[in-house]
Image 1 (tube, rainbow, N blue to C red):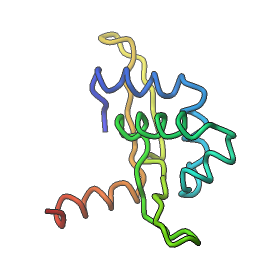
Image 2: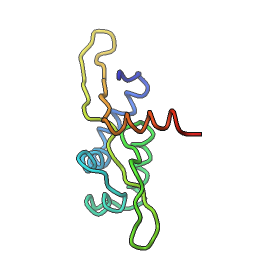
Image 3: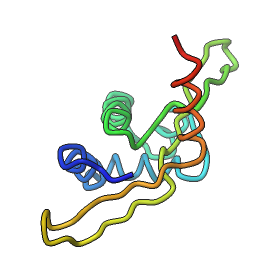
Amino acid sequence: MKVAEGLREKILAQLADSESFQIIACVLEEKKSAMTIGKELNLPSTTLYRKISELKECGLLMIDTFALRPDGKREALYACTFREMVFRATTEHGFELEIIPSARSLEKRWFELFFSR
């Protein structure tokens, strides 16, 4: 999926931010709760939730599922939405960004498209 210029800039800004990059790296292999991510990266909760929101907004992070905590409350488990990013040099715009979505990301999008509402 080729990324439009405006979104490309947002994605690049997130990848350039060290905390956002660490969050992405933390959920590349397995889905994790915000509490787990925060403990692993030693991030304050306000910073963590702001970064998660920004990453979700530009499509790099998604809520994969929900889990029940020992206290009975449910918590979101976050996952990376892509399996690969490709940067290509072009003469038109300097470079082009292509994101190859993860299988789980595609599955969730199809489900939401056909079964929500």
